[in-house]
Length: 363
Ligand SMILES: C[S@@+](CC[C@H](N)C(=O)[O-])C[C@H]1O[C@@H](n2cnc3c(N)ncnc32)[C@H](O)[C@@H]1O
Image (cartoon, rainbow, N blue to C red; front, side, top):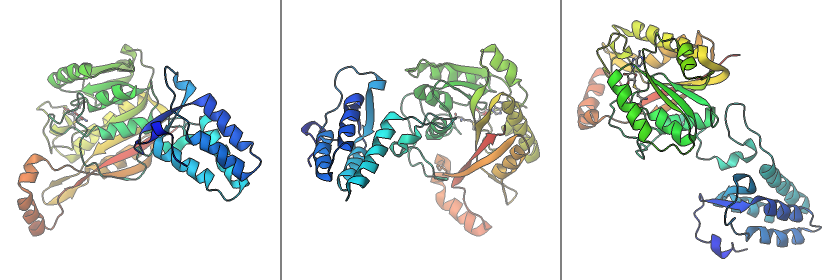
């Protein structure tokens, strides 16, 4: 079988929009075949089907990925028996006609194989930061956009609200615009909040979602009244990326979590933020904490596990601990040899990872 001329040259990951009604009719025709040979002949026509041209609504087309689509057709064609081929065909047809999503995302489980750009393993190795659009690395201590991207796609639906109580340079809000999620960001520093608000507004807003930036101390603000001021009933996902205690001093403000006198005060302050967020997070929805550890007084201080333990004392259950590679800061890169020497001499390992702790609010 050769694919139709207009499909030759497609990359395996390219999307192919096929007219849904015609496609389902043709697959049904294959299903009605009386012999495996007849089924294979009819399948040839399906394989040669060209993409939907002109203006079609999203409901009128089926979008498949070229590589996977041809793999599915190959599996049917190479089935040894008519019964087996019909089994695969029915499964394929069902995947186009049925939509089954988890209560917390838009992922169509009937077509789960199409989502191979969504990560499901607990080790995240992100080689390159996404610097497109308004994303940039100018803000010291910001996270890579791929983190909120993955979290929002897996744990929120289009049109829902995402809360980020440590807004910084607005990575979450920029990504939320792209993914069609409304988002509220809270930042302690007035100047940072203002600058971030301007940047978020420069990002395209193709889905016409709302982006809200507020200056406040997340460890004491009443999130309920903050949401009420914007007529937001509650949020469906919270992404928290606090300072890793005093590793980076974000400001001199006493409420700043990077300015707390010791680790206990940092963990207390952070726990207050989580407790406040919990009150406005919808039941059974997710809260993600992106955090790294620190080294002090010749000891590894496990900020991640210390904060995790406190969150488990609130109304949350632990769903995953993800380990993510840590980009070397420019300073550390230039001193790589020195750090290696220090590690060998001092009996420790140089930080190369941080965590994404994933929690689900209990009922
Ligand atoms: C690690 S950064 C977040 C970076 C962000 N994820 C980004 O990609 O730009 C932490 C941010 O939390 C802010 N912050 C610290 N303490 C805070 C508090 N009590 N309330 C609100 N924001 C706070 C800091 O000013 C800093 O901008």
